[in-house]
Image (spheres, rainbow, N blue to C red):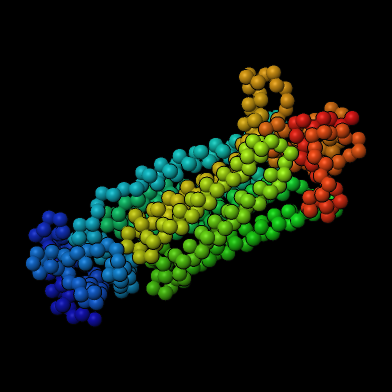
Length: 461
């Protein structure tokens, strides 16, 4: 360890910096530094042939003032490790930042807050529209399990919005050296609290889509199609992966408080949390693609026009927006390694996490929105002459008794048809259905052929 005299010389030399307007500090602040801060400077700087002051100008050198690079990372790691408390290490980093004239007036808080409030409002409107589309008085199909899961997904959406607002109140979006130490610590705590909430939200929305598929394509008595088996397998994988990721984040450090007190491995008391976060993001993106693409082959088999098929598939493929946000988020993890400027460096990850959560929630409500828009359009004064009823496409809209009646016409123009599995009958006269000689492999094993009716399907006689 350096001697006391060496530390005093270090502090006095640094105090001489007060002659420069850009890079300056006062002697009182230098003398108030914890001993661990100058000790780290005396230990780390010689390894990089870097001195504290330029001999010609008696100002801090550029190598010492670098905010990024191996020297900056090692110096930060030393301060975080050697100082007994996180408060002391932050005081040292703040002293360096102000003495080296780091940026002081940057502010991302407005962007973070505006994104959280505006997109939360839009998400809430989409959720209300989804439940409105289920309303029987608007020809909706009623509520089911997928709606309950979506409502459960809304809980972490509220949670992550609250966390974003609280983080901004504690200075998130600004530079740490311009904030009180207590605010920096509180902001870091709220950031790490948001990670399990984020995972719960994004995996929950994917689960709601899988359950929606199970609702659209129900099973027949005594028969379970391979499509439904795949859906149940993916649903189980989503639940298991979500629980594993959430618990691994919560218990990544021992003790748990080191999660927000220190960055990444926290001097060996935590796992490689940044690498783990990248792995979680990759799993999330992979599940996104699987869940989004899963229903496309079945949607393309519908007996509708190409334009209608494109519109129907678009309702589901809009989820690729959330996947794009997830991939962009993976590129923003560099700022999580050092913990030098947590209130600034953590914002990109937090911002893209927010956008992804909101987009995921909006996307899982989009399929329901299509039917609602069509039904509202048909009810408008501009289409008073069109008396056709447009029903919700997510569920069977009629019982077996209704389908057997002479007055029932299962019509779903311009939207995805009812997912009712209708067994072809000898009495049905229908020129619009293509009588496939080779049944779908999912249907062949059950002994019947499923047809998706369109608006042109005549009533049974």
